[in-house]
Amino acid sequence: MVFERKPLADCVPALVATARGDMPATLVITGGKLVNVCSGEILDGMSVGIQEGRIAYVGKDVSHMIGENTKVVDAAGKYIAPGLLDGHCHIESTQLTVTEFARAVLPLGTTGGFFDAHEIANVFGLKGIKLMLDEMRTTPLAAYMQVASCVPSAGPEFETTGAAIGPEEVAEAFTWGDDVIALGEVMNFPGVVYGDDKMLGEIQATLRAGGQVDGHFTWPASDWRLPVYAAAGVTGDHECVTAEDVIERVRLGMYAKMRRGSAWHDVAKTITAHTEHGLDPRRMMLVTDDRSSESLRDEGHMDFVVRHAIAQGVKPVTAFQMATINTAERFGVARDIGSITPGNIADIILLDGNLADVNVVMTIAAGTVVAENGVMTVSLPSFAYPQEVLSSVHLPKRPTAADFIIKAPVESGNVSTRVIKVLENHVETMERILSLPVLEGKLQVGDELCKIAVLERHKGTGNISVGVVEGVGFHEPAAIAMTVAHDSHNVLVIGSDDELMAVAVNAVADAQGGVAVITGAGTTLFPLAIAGLMSAEPFEVAAAQSAAISKALYNAGCTLNYAFMTLSLLALAVIPTLRLSDKGLVRITPEDGIQLVPLFCGESINATV
Image 1 (spheres, one colour):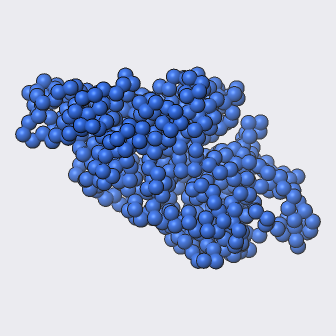
Image 2 (image 1 turned 90 degrees about the vertical axis):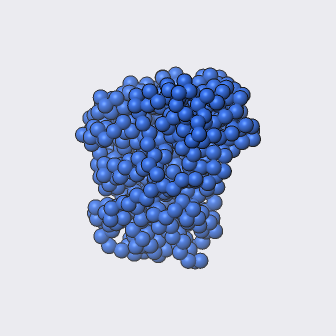
Image 3 (image 1 turned 120 degrees about the horizontal axis):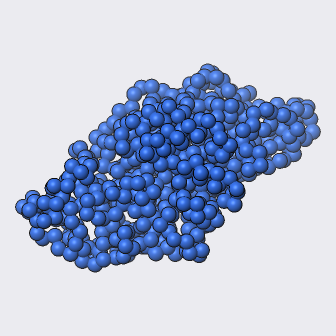
């Protein structure tokens, strides 16, 4: 089946003729309760007529456009709502291909989204983005691509990536079509604030192409540099973790994106900007950012986020606005998606029971019923990735336990050591300074601590950096290695045993990407062959393999919520406070910006931005 979304201009004669009753509709929905996100009302006894994948008519009676071949959907007792939109999502973080992602979320009521493919971009650059865009176009989703802005996220002096993207590449991507819509989250916000030519050039290329610019500002909302960041043309930001973050962004004319991913639980606090502080919600959006295949299966997608917002005290209609029309307006496509209004594309969901339950029983995408009662009713075409993308792990040698020994600056005694402190359900980390013992010149890591290492896997440089992490929770010899290590996606390994760390790294290298947990009970492997990021398996298989990783981590003592998602961010150099890349420890603070810092206090490293 071909899922075509025709431009409105091409459909005008047929839409008008259908609305008059001179041409039968292809599909009508009759007698439901319309969730009108334009007016904020629930309207009883409403019907919708559809022609050529767009909405021809919304009103009480559509009998005049029902013909012999018109499909009729009786919505009596059900709500008719616009399909849900995800305003900030990395499909690669679901560990699924775009096709399998579509299979997973369409039955849940997600009909479109604004996808930032900066994960595969850090591995394969524009080629990776284009592959995902091509696959998006084969699905029923209203899928819009954001061009990755930070490849690498913090600059080549801080990390090694498989590719690089700059202003010329951004300008090229915007020639691919109208579904390339925005510059992805500009994580190098210090670079924007302090006039980095590359970052400002990418923003300028986007604005000249008529695109939007998405933000990623993690300094406090009260920081004087937030308005500087906004002055560059950044009009949306998902790094909101407090009500104040939302308030200050909205006051500056930005769209504040409130995130409920698998492990990022920010909606409960941020939504109080509306529920307690009374701000107008029309510049507030609900997004997922990162949700694993396991959490898609167990919790849901945007339906889960909307349901969660309602549970925090948001009126149901308002919550739907935050996941439909607000999102469409933010990206300038409200003429096509985000509401059930004449002329718009017919992305529609039917919901049973109480609206607050967000119980989706039918999904219509571009005028075609694609899912009913949680099951896809159409098949999606397959999409093949080239062999290059299936062979992306390039380690110059197989690591051994010796590669994870940390040599101390003293032979014995104690040494002050920087330690990454994991914070559950948050993307940020803390920097801790701990006095750790040294024996025969080697740092001794134990007592609730683990070693963490990053091995460069794109260019065969042989770079390996090793540090210390707190809060993982392993209570036995264990290790986890992964090629999902935001955003450079080198090989990240964490463990309480050097030998098992080496085994874990070699397991994911042999699989050409994935996640491996090694314990005394054996090996649990989740292969991610596509760029080392995505599974080649169906959604159901990937979700089960993701869940097996979670179980193995839990059994080893790591009880973090969706632990893999949290641990995979420990290499993300642009989020406060302390991270590890293949170049070493990276610290970001409002006072000092981004800088490489030594593992042992008192030593010196030069790179600073």
